[in-house]
Amino acid sequence: MIVLNGKGVFGGVAIGKLSLYQKQQHQIKRYHVEDADAEIARFEEAKKGTLVQLQELYNKALKEVGEANAAIFEVHQMMVEDLDYIESIINMINTQNVNAEYAVATTGDNFAEMFASMDDAYMKERSADVKDISERIISVLSNATKSTVDSDEPVIILAEDLAPSETVQLDKDKVLAFVTKFGSSNSHTAILARTMNIPALISVDVDLTEELNGRMAIADGFTGTVYLDPDEETLKKMQEKRAKDLEKKELLLQLKGKENVTLDGKSINIYANIGNVSDVANVLQNDAGGVGLFRSEFLYLETTDYPTEEEQFQSYKAVAERMAGKKVIIRTLDIGADKQVDYFNMDKEENPALGYRAIRICLDRIDIFKTQLRALYRASAYGKISIMFPMIISVEEVREIKKIVEEVKAELRDLGIPFDDCELGIMIETPAAVMVSDLLAKEVEFFSIGTNDLTQYTLAIDRQNPKLDKIYNPHHTAVLRMIKMVADNAHANGIWMGICGELGADLELTETFLAMGIDELSVSPSLILGLRKKVRETNVDAVKDALLDRLK
Amino acid sequence: MKQFKYVIKDEQGIHARPAGLLVKKANEFSCKVTIGKDGKDADAKRIFGIMGLAAKCGNEVTITCDGEDEEAAAKGLEAFLKENL
Image (tube, rainbow over all chains, first blue to last red; front, top):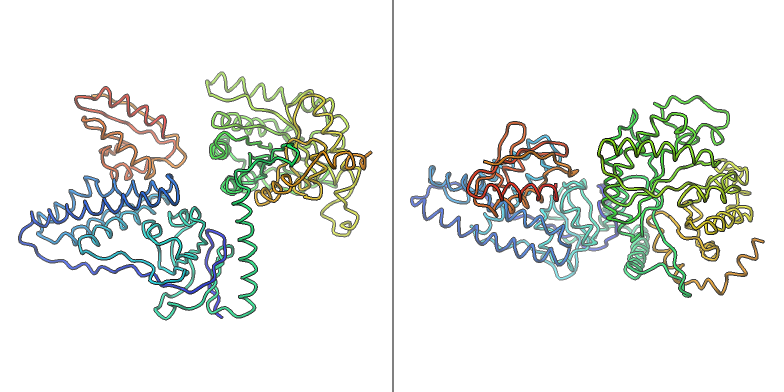
């Protein structure tokens, strides 16, 4: 068995024979043509044929991978019709009396070169598009047949690189996975693979030789590994991995678009916890109703200095826009304790979990807090943003926060910057907040329980200490009573409440949470559909009394 | 001649797709449409030219319409930029 390493750009496991995909190498010969006008006519004819092909590809892509991904072929059509491009080709034929193939290839190289030399990663990639359209025109000129999969059974496609047009052209039913030696995770091919739901691996360290053709292989898109001639043990392991993945994808298929409603008609919102802008793809793929917790810390943890208002604004805006009107609850800075940031220059503390952290820092260093709030409010004009404050212990803190929020809003108003009135809420993660939750509920529009910290503070157990694992019981009646108390106080005061800690995804407690009338559970994107399944199989009315009695 | 300036707000700048849409829009008008950035001008009816400007988020571009329907073109393109970029 040979193990080859690369990078997975779309998860999934494929087991099958390798099929070497070779581009038709057009050896472009330059030759002299007597009749330049006839050669130009030949080019014009080929251009027409190319446009027809691209239109067909566009239609195929539209059906298979959606409009946004199909758009690239519309762009390709425009490139083929670009006057600079055409003029360059015609000019070359006219003045040098060269054949059309040569003129197209040379012009294509020149334009590709222009993009390749641009100081912009995205534009650099576009040189591949220029090459792609030029090759297409040349193959029409030389009447070449299209490359296709030359096999009856589905195969793992192995290629140097794949142009988007080549990816779409392949017969989807015959492709188990894409494996390329080059390519980038931003390439259209990677994007298309994701949309087509086909495992894809790039930058795989392999020499493409004819002898690879037809050999057994396993491509693991999760790890980016290719096993060539796998041994029994690996094969068995990967078959299991594949089955598990398919089961999950099946679940996705069954539950995507379905409501989170119990058998007796009670509904609950299931949102996603995220820690970065790039997580949004996963959120949408798993069909979350919104983002229940966007941890803003990454902005602070990934830099060597305070992130600027503009940097923060761009991130919040990106998430709000991509969620397209669905609720996005962003938690303000929650550092300290186990999350340390060098440039904050914080003193070493005896007891950081009970120390200078989260909202306590923000209310002390108001400049940092205001920068974040301004960025949040500016981004609110681009979607549906709610703001949530962590580590609250008192009504006074909330009032102080609201005062600062009003100042920020007034500043933005004076500057004429548009913003929405964000829904404001707090994390309930201290026993103090639980005990005064009736009072807090009159100050804010929602609660979200952070069960990790709440459990740690309630049980007085450091969850990082492995010695205490045995007695760390997140199902402790004290914790569950706290949650119920918060739910009751929220509802008595007409606000909604949810859970965004790990407990929210605990399927053993889903019935209890439904019985308490909890309005929202926010969990990791990958756990959403499993939770939805559980909710849809529950009859709350039947178990409600028994579950709640246990907490009395 | 009609001219206006616009600051790109789209995160990705004028990438391939909006460049293509811009070409489509510009072609709706018969007048000459030029897009300029930092002293470099490109014909807004040619996709490679537009992409060659590499206009990014925050960059200011100048649109110049010159010809019979310049008034309508400037209006139409301004609305297009606001909506798409």
